[in-house]
Image (cartoon, rainbow, N blue to C red):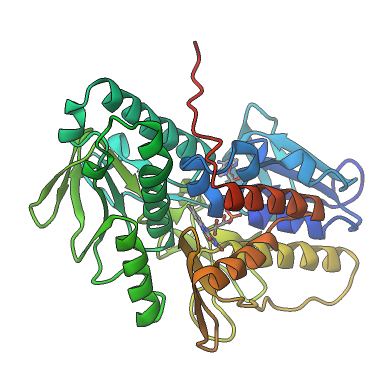
Length: 419
Ligand SMILES: Cc1cc2nc3c(=O)[nH]c(=O)nc-3n(C[C@H](O)[C@H](O)[C@H](O)COP(=O)(O)OP(=O)(O)OC[C@H]3O[C@@H](n4cnc5c(N)ncnc54)[C@H](O)[C@@H]3O)c2cc1C
């Protein structure tokens, strides 16, 4: 018990999973403490729009204190978790005193996996955090400025971009960069030979979007090609340096930018827990999302390997899985504190979806129905609005997204550096 004599629920991570858990504990007779290394929640599905200047930082990063403003009993700390002692039920942080818990919600998410590709950790641009998206945007804008001053840079591949990964992150990013290049930047820099800039999407598997039906894969391929993206499947990146990307096929591409959207692995902290980990360094959980042998510890979101009770498959690392699992943990802890019955986790699948560009998206529902184009993009919007925690956030997002969709203005295409 905490000093207040109420049980303490410690939530690690303010992503969809952690915030979902905190929201469901709002009325519980518990002291709730949420700790994240940032003071904001990142809406990852929109990172590519930040990276291409369509949305501003505050449309993608939301203050955690705002999100939990109405949560009277929640305390938020900004600190990095350094160690979790499951037996002592205590968590250590950098710059914050250790915190003990009665219940732990472990929602620290995943991080990029470069699969040991030579030079990737030093030179690639991953797309998983807010700083990643801002860094990529600044880098691209600086390259266009440089090419404007010295046109010989274009022939050296300064404007060429290689995007790795034929899943939603890679496809969305390649499509968005193509629209930024062929639209706004082509107009901004009339003296730069934009048509010489190559955007190449590289996927090691035989096709893009393996999780979708063949007709949606073909649609995605065509939508990318129409936007001027070259798609290379069946080959992987072997190595990368600041200006060149070498493929395993032996081809060497001139490109001063390699965007990495190809793989994830569980938060590195999981390796210190002494647990047997599942594929992608994820923690396996029971049907109620608790850690086997630790009924007080709930593992949720991207860091968890949750088996779908309907299909028997491990659920994908998606915002809706993270939110629903976090909410389930919050609801279950609240019920246990109140001495009520609890239920196992049951995922509600709202369909698999991805956007490729303006008016181009794909959706595949559980029973096999599919959608493409503007309708699919609207469905994407509805499902992703539901991921936002409050009605105020949803209203703000509608204004931001509608503004970006109608004006097509990339208001964020500025670089802000220290003088
Ligand atoms: C580019 C991109 C596009 C995506 N698009 C979609 C999409 O269209 N639809 C969809 O459903 N899903 C999408 N996803 C997946 C979705 O965003 C994730 O599944 C979801 O964010 C996972 O939520 P989470 O709470 O588990 O983890 P996260 O959102 O990663 O949150 C983890 C939190 O833990 C914090 N943290 C990590 N380590 C520490 C530490 N040591 N100390 C303190 N805090 C720490 C982080 O700061 C972070 O806030 C996308 C992901 C990416 C990267």
